[in-house]
Structures are given as C-alpha cells and as structure tokens.
Image (cartoon, rainbow over all chains, first blue to last red; front, side, top):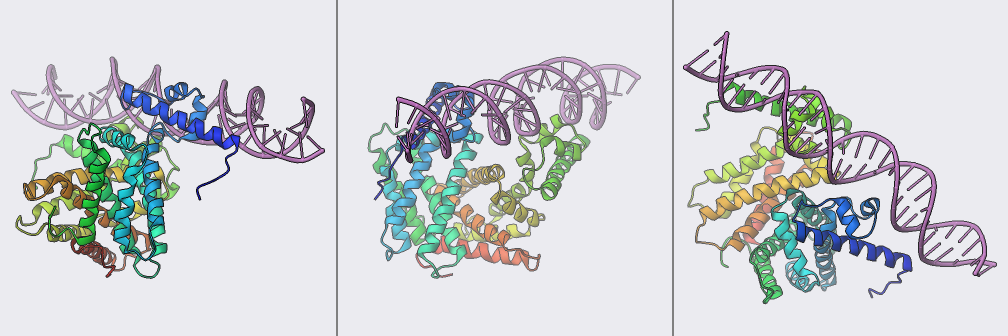
Length: 204
Length: 204
DNA sequence: CGCCAGTTTGCACTCTGTGCAAAGTTGCAC
DNA sequence: GTGCAACTTTGCACAGAGTGCAAACTGGCG
C-alpha cells in the first residue's frame, strides 16, 4: 500500500534532507538552542548554505522533522480507523498508536528545547497548526453533514491540545526511557477520555 | 483598583508603543501582510528603526497587540470569578465576557491576516501559548490539590483551542459588524459547553 | 540651574532568507 | 556510451531582521 517507486533523484533528496535534519539536531544538542547558525548546519551536513535553504525555510524548521512525522502518523492512523467508529473513540485509538512512531525520543527533546526558545516554539506550534488544518479536513469529510464546522474545529483543536498536554508532561519528566512510550500512551488516553466525556469532573 | 500612578515617562512610553502598533496595523491593512518593513513602521510612527526594536522583537509582534489585550482580559475575567464556582462555568463566563473588549474588530482582522501569513501566524500562536501558561498557573492555584497537572494542562489547552475555533469562525464570516460581538459570544459559549459536557454527541 | 536616570538614536555588525544564473548530476532515448 | 533534457546544487548579491554599544537627548527633582 505504501509502496512507491523512488528514483535515484528522490532518494538523494530524501537522504540530503535527513542529513540536514540530523546535523541540526546534533548541533542543537551540543551547542544548545540558539547557539548555531544555518551556515553551521549546512557545513555539518556537507551542503552549501544555499542548499540548506532549499530544504528548510529556517534553522528551526530543520529541527521539527520528528514532530512532523509524529503528526503525519496521527493523521494516517486516524484515516485508517473504521468509518462507523464513534469519532472520539477513533481519535483515542489513533493518537494512542502514534506513540509507536520511531523517533519518539526526538519529539520529547523537541518539546523540552522549545520550552526555552521562542523561535523554536513558534515553529513547533506552526507544525501543529498545519496538522490541525489537515485533520480538520479529514474529520469534516468523515462526518460530512453530521456536525457543524464549529464543532469540528473545536473538537480537533482540543484533541491536539490534549495530545500536546500529554506530550509536555511526558517530556518534562526525565524518563530514563523506562516504559517511556507506555507512560505517554496512558497520558494521551487519559486526556482524550476527558475530552470525550467532558471536563466537568476532575476525575483523573 | 486599577488605579496606578503614571509618570510622564511611562505615559510617553505607552503612547509610543500605541503609536507603533497603530502604524503597523495601518500598514498591514494598506500594503497587505508582508508588504512592509520594520523601517516603514518606524517611519510611520515617527521613531527610529532602533526604537521600534526597543518596543517589539519583530514587525509581527507589533501587530498582535489586540490579541494580547483580548487574552489579558480573559485572564483577568477568570481571576474575577468567584472561587467556589465550578471551573468550567467560570471559564465559560470569563471567555464570554472577553467579547466586550474594546478592539475586538482588530482581533478578527488579525485572525484573517494570520491565516495567510506563516510568520504572523507563528507570532500569533506564541501569544496564545504565553497566555495558556499564565492561565494554567492561575487554574492550578485555584484548584490546588483538587486536580492533576495533566488535567489542568489538557483543560486549559482545550479551553483556548475552543476559543480560537470560535474566533476563527466568527472572523472568517464577513460580519458587517451587525451583532458581531453577540455572534462571537454565542460561538464561544457553544464550544465551551461541548468541552464541559463532552464531545461525544455532536449536539450543536 | 544642574545632575541623575531613563529613553532615543545612529552605527556597525551578524544572520536570515531569496532571486538569479552558472555549474554539476541524473535519467533516458538512441 | 553519447548526448540531450530535466533537475539539483552552488556562489553571489542583496534586502531585511535583530542586537550591542556609545553618544545625544529628555524628564524628574533637589
């Protein structure tokens, strides 16, 4: 299903993109956020500064690749849920499944780094916003005619806020990778269950 | 209660800040987003480029002043609700009251402009994120011991997402200012009621 | 007035981000 | 394999963001 023919060209571009993102992540970990420039990332990835900007609009964008795969995964998992499942149960299952994404640890690091750097935080929030727009479209298709635009926007926005809250909590506690994904999944399910059943009772 | 002595100095700074923000808004409306520079804003406000950057970190920041007063108002209204009121009812009342903020129309324009400009959108999202952190603190104080950190983060994040959804809907329909605030208030109350009672039933 | 503290300004500098055209690669038909 | 067409990388030039610094300026107060 996900089989796609990749020419040598596309393969190379993908590899370059991956190399740049990795270089950026390395620099962020060693020099700390804000302690490096686009040119340094390019050098580390063995491309020119100009090429760096062919792939990313800004140094910050090179850092949020892991979050984007997380969000892509969320979107794909949601699309894969059966169409007759109640929308909130589908969302809970889909978001819970995202914790199995390969570079989950990078996402956690990203949350921590973004907390201390407004530029990175802004870029990070933009990625979530773009994902929100895509998921809103998907949910509108799924519920066509059954729910108002306002309902869908409020629901999807809240969904992602809950996921963010869960990830923030998970990222802030220094998990020594012990049961990491499990804890995150529990938190996500907990917040989304509140969303489904209402926040009236601070049950959890 | 809000009486504070203002020296001539502080008065001047406030006036300068206001003038810069107004200049930025004027330019955004005439030249369109992205069609002007920090220097042009400074010129229009009769200050130097350097002074502009003493007041705002970026051209985009000068534009989101109206959103920040909206969010300040939300925070203040929430703090003013009686302490024994259920938290969700307090939030509904507080957010509904924000529609009486003076420059509501500017907020709507801002939502529309941000939709078409990633830089402005990122800055806008950052303002909401900062407000979220402040409101989280306030709610944690209010519910001290009665709710988990995760609950509070998920709740406040969802609260603001619902408010955003309501404002987005309100801003996107070209209200000829007819019943503008009323419509917005209705939408806010509608989304927050879903939040309180759960999104399971697409009732609205 | 005359001084102190706070504010504005010009200047110099680094870095971001983009258009453009030249140089280098890859895919493909022959 | 040759060679052309399409695509990618790179260097260069330039406009604009953002900041540190020191000099000039302004308000407050004895």
